[in-house]
Length: 217
Image (tube, rainbow, N blue to C red; front, side, top):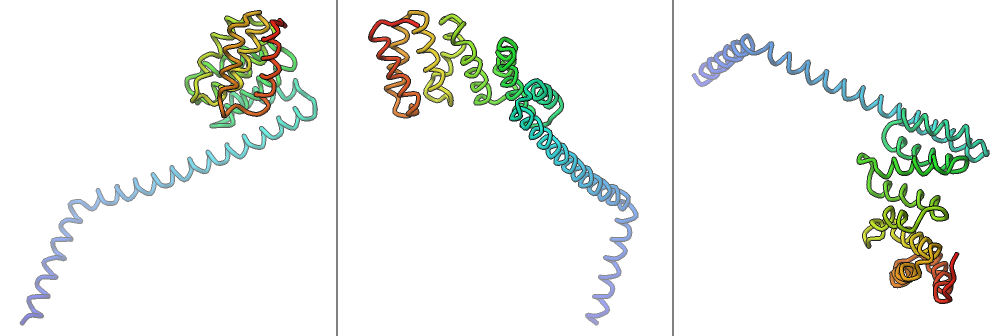
């Protein structure tokens, strides 16, 4: 008797499932199709992004090889192309390398390129600071201390990655401008920071002696 009831229950369940499938089966099929299509699209996108990254990496290496071979104009053009066409991190790296190559042939254009990176809100702060410091290195012999201070003073805060370079550039700029008070201030900031690199500390010691002697560049 129990077997009969069990068979009846199974038949009822089959009928219920059949009715549900007749009513909602096309939705289930559509959902499966969408899932498969979504996975396929994601796989395709991932493959395309990987392909572009590999191509950008190869192009970046070729541009770097041109720079190492002394073909700076060709390298600058190659990095400029990557800066507009590459994806992800290679685009930012290419912009930095393009500016570095420009610095060899046109310092004003290089400063403009670095300034553009430093002002780009889509770029991370570390890269922005790096670009600002590199522009500072190009300007330290010609720009006024006021200009250098406006550019680099925000980068001297304790949490900024390139604070040591920014402080050193400001100390040197102030000394060149004859502002011994400002030069001394930045030199002291460098020397009092226990994390100051040895090279920066050594150069600042020399500069401190010049400041103490009242010298001017």
